[in-house]
Amino acid sequence: MLIRRPVAEVFEAFVDPAITSRFWFTKGSGRLDRETEVRWDWEMYNFSVQVKVREVEKDKRIVVEWGAYDERSTIEWIFTARPDNTTFVSITNSGFTGTGDEIVKKALDSTEGFTFVLAGAKALLEHNVELNLVRDRFPDGVGEN
Image (cartoon, rainbow, N blue to C red; front, side, top):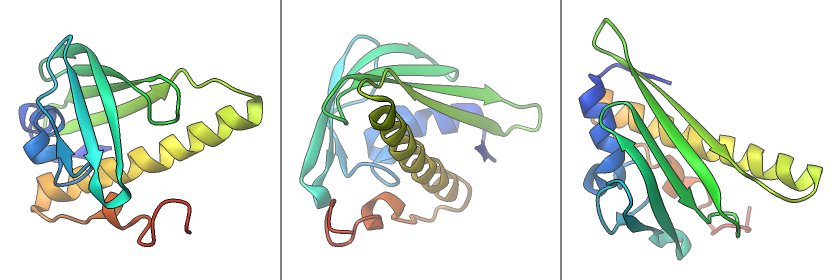
């Protein structure tokens, strides 16, 4: 997703939970720093996950492990600064296990979720608008829709 903001600003939005909570989770226990562990909460879904930060390369890359699918998987964000002072962000969630069908379902769920995250980040950073995409995805609770 192209975000029309400088790479330092976009990167900060993903490492600072005060900003990230405006477009993804509702609360984070701390900044993403290399070899730390933080907790992310989605209070509207009564869900939280422990996140182990593996790599942080300022304004370039973040790698974490988390257990959002009842198993550990890896998320990697790549931040590419562009000559016009915009940033291209890519997210890869890998390491899913299970049967072929289970892996496909997890990959599709992950793709959908991170699409909401990127769209929410774009709206916030470019227009200072909170779309509440993740918060509103399941208005009756996860599993009710």
